[in-house]
Length: 528
Image 1 (cartoon, rainbow, N blue to C red):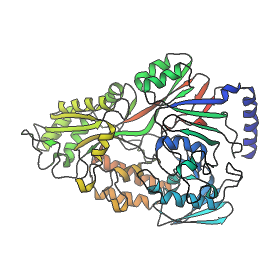
Image 2: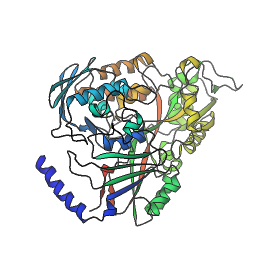
Image 3: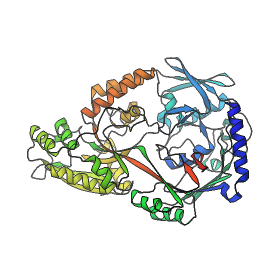
Image 4: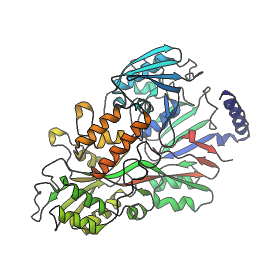
């Protein structure tokens, strides 16, 4: 391995020497704006950049499966102990070596972080970290924690000496705390404008081809793509399907697309006896709530032409979905097909459930979270109306939608009866998704935190509990697939499609797409 790294380093050094100086600056146009530099505060755009500066014990491949990172290997010691072997020769940007004490400090700091956006949930099972020797760390949990390596991919390791117990946001923004082990160091963060990072003087892997990387925040899709076509930047993310043609038709540029792990699905209010936006002919809420009947939920699912939605409403920017995770991800069930588009079957199921004339329904969704969200919801509403469920669609700004969808229990809980939302976990693993959006709502145990439909199934809960306690990978995957089949049969949610990610690059670059839609400079290379 060391010989391979040295060989790659020599080859890359020669390539860098042959590149013009200007080519060593990579400029990336980013739709979302970074708003913080503390790596233990969670927010996807921030993490996208922070992962260049700080690294985790466990990295993720393109489908977010765990692979070696700062830890070259790990193993189960006993039912409540994991052992991680640190990679040899890792140093922080200031030259100090990575030590187990830095790992322990970082995990504690991440677990104790407070606020709306933290990674504390990923650390909920950890009760202690022990130093075995200079390169070995043991992490103790409160019981079996089979997804600990997956969860640790979110936790960046920082220097205990540089950060201490009082580091502020300014300290991370180019100050004393901006010391990581990554291939780049943090230089400057201009809130609302850009972030600049520069290649670190030392790193354990072969050097990156870019001396400097600048992330510019350009929220407008047309403006971002125009900046690429004008030569102002070399890479843009979040190219919407409507603009694929502008990039694809110009021989100076490449269009890269890939199915992401982001699942657009419908929450179904199956928890309440009366649901506010399910109404009878008189316009009043129906009692009992029809959405509690699995036959009605199946009717809604069969009413959807998922392929048509992905190809037309999303303009080719999506892939039809019939389960939690797409192919290649943990918990995907290969032989679980897409529910059939069958309006006749849907109408028959409604009649069987006692609603031959249908009922009234309002579908709420976002209007600005991703390209095509409002258009897709309008099409879904028409498909429901076609089977006799008279559907009105309310497309809302995301800020308003989530405030209403996440209404506190004291205020009555989630407001909607049926809503369209996009969900993705940092691990990409189906068990984490089900724990968050489908497990019986139990805030004290941090279960079902985003279960807006208040779906509850004792069989699913029991399967998820077994998954959490099963350390054998093969057995756990079998249980996960059983859980996915169970919840899809019971239609706890209605998956619609997986959103596709799109990037534009200059022709002389290659880009490796990731399932989390991150745009990593470490995945962008000069074309051969």
